[in-house]
Figure 1 (cartoon, helix red, strand yellow):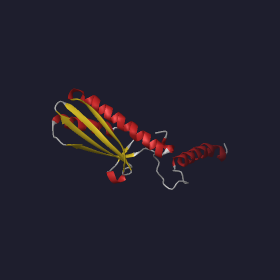
Figure 2 (cartoon, rainbow, N blue to C red; figure 1 turned 120 degrees about the horizontal axis):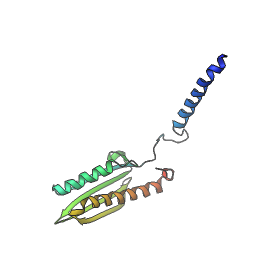
Figure 3 (cartoon, one colour; figure 1 turned 135 degrees about the vertical axis):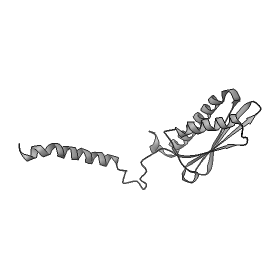
Figure 4 (cartoon, rainbow, N blue to C red; figure 1 turned 180 degrees about the horizontal axis):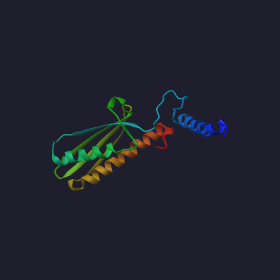
Length: 148
């Protein structure tokens, strides 16, 4: 068997590895080499009271936002979107408020209110509304980010 026939599978494998490397590298024509089009978000949680229910809601919100795969959670100075979430309890009702800003300018305020007994649903609703708002703003300002 000639030596060129023995080297053919190795040459094909090296060519495939080279193509894989080229597809992984960033776009060299862009000024930044960011491989992700996901929004960079900072989330700050606040509460005026230290009640158990309020702390449970904040922990629930923190867990829900931490598992978001379509966002990069960053510090405030590195984030494009800043979200300030305030949880308040008045009598037997909860108020969850999220102030969303993009690059320092206010974008929207989302408020969810309801009885204390449906705190899980309130947290889910707030996360859904905030996610929709940030996603819409990010797609409007970054049209190339439509596939995240």
